[in-house]
Image (spheres, one colour):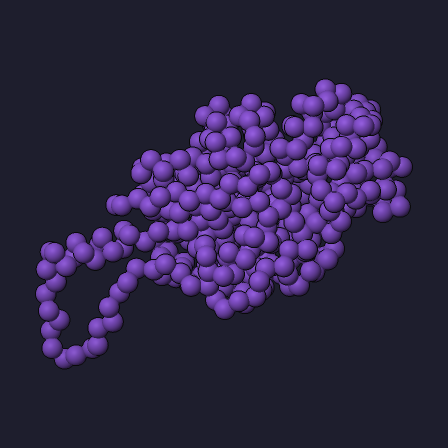
Length: 364
């Protein structure tokens, strides 16, 4: 099949957009238009249908193969698992045809989804729920692509359990965003109240990193790859706690929620018209994520080439802590619905005002 030219919008710096909470405001527009295979509508008659020639069959197949899936992503951990697929598409070795767009802010990507500019998008998990509500159910989540990427960082080696945060101050980015909700949930699950721990909010992760640079004994909550970058600049810093691991420790042995960072959604109209292509994407996305997990050197080079992380060595160091994973089907629904429940209990607006119903989850 013919390959379309790779389109990637490269931005200057890694943003915190992948962690945006209820502040994201996707544009409310009509249902997005989609790229679909053209099909003729044949009226029913009592006469036999004319025979289809081999040439006509070939033309129909070529038309189906010419469908290009427009994929949008954010410049961060959620797209680290996508880089092999981007590279394979550029080399013409994918089964589907793709066109990729990468942006730095969640609101940019939600506008593309709401405006029908992309068919598939890799978004913060809660933003996927917000879009579901904003578009009256016109998107479906098809996989989880990234689990927790948040870590408590400090130069104080005595801090290694959650109860030791009592009486301490934690610096974190974005009040009312995923880091805020996730930390509050873990603190509450550990039996700590809001009075026990002081949360000092900064506008972005870079400001938290600056606090740690000035005072290594301070405690900051940062996402990857900011964690790796901060530790590279100050060897006194270390990861003292993994928020995803803490989250998991408070779940039942089976059927618990997960700390989900990124989810992949699809426009439902596109899904209905091209479910076979979406299933192929899922298989190719899973293979791309597996490559990222098992080939860190090559994956780091691709991540740097896409401008997701400035340098390959930093990308390689960050990868093991970015929790890039492929989760689909019932396991995806259990993990994601539980996570959205936690956010909804703290602030319904963080998931769009209402929890998504079963139609939100694509279970092929």
